[in-house]
Image (cartoon, rainbow, N blue to C red; front, side, top):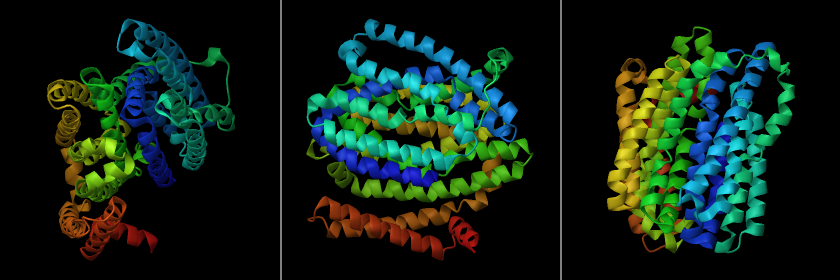
Length: 466
């Protein structure tokens, strides 16, 4: 179900991004992306790491309605208090920081995200593995957003309307989560709640989530301060493409945390390691394929999705592509830390990640603009990847034989040569045909080689079907 949701995340941007990029151009898309990134900082603080902490804690007691109900209510109460405080700080920041008050209406539109993300209890439905509901709900809201976008967004001056549609399509469905909550929990009296028991363990998750969330948004925020709105507009297309590919690679990994937490609560450490190995094998194959297709077809992808105005972002797309693999591995490692009760170590690494991203960004963005932002992201993810790999070397040694790295790299190189040859021969044709033929040729050769060499992922899928 999560892969279906991810597929919809691919299909809708393929429709919306080309339209929005051409209608709003670099200014409109840049303004929306900058404000969205700034508001996400405040939203991260308001959430206090509960989207991760809540998944783990609820997954442990999902078979006990009474305990589950109490935990959900306690966490919701904490979120309401934190969101109120953070929202006031946000309003003060708008009027104190000149760059933020340049577009107050757009800031206020996106400020609703602070409340919608906090009150949406998405973490609860992930904990009880209601992926069917999550998928259907998100697809319906995307369809609503799609209709509204084509109906209301027609000129550059409509960028604020587009911002409102983005908020509605991304977070509007969270209101349905509250209505549906009574099916799964029983609301008890406020005096029976014990908020304090969550504060200490939640602090580590808050530090971790805020740090990791901030360093993934720092590139756009720093570019907004050091560069221009048009530069942000060029770069936001690169980030959207990177995030789409990351979602595809991490479509399986995203559902790991509740299952690993459940295994750990039952003493199934070996099952946890096996799950990590299978997901690492999956993301290695998929991420290498996506990175190769981006490197071979960056110009075609940018022209297709953004148009001529975004031609200058092709090189940045190539530069940022390794982050697809690095960020996906870091996500799986983070989930393993949390499921096994090592969230403190994960939080420390996330703080380091935020620090090095600020350093890399401050050095490279003023010098190289959007290319510097792309390089900063890759260097940051690589630094975090190295630290996590060293600290989890025992896990990597345990699952190494199931990863099939050598076979995956060999298949990637062979498929890349074939696809590159195809792109060279089709150089004069429209970009859509070049991209389609190159991608299909790559995937066919890559898939055949993986099957012939009996890659562990292929073996697992074939045996699973039998």
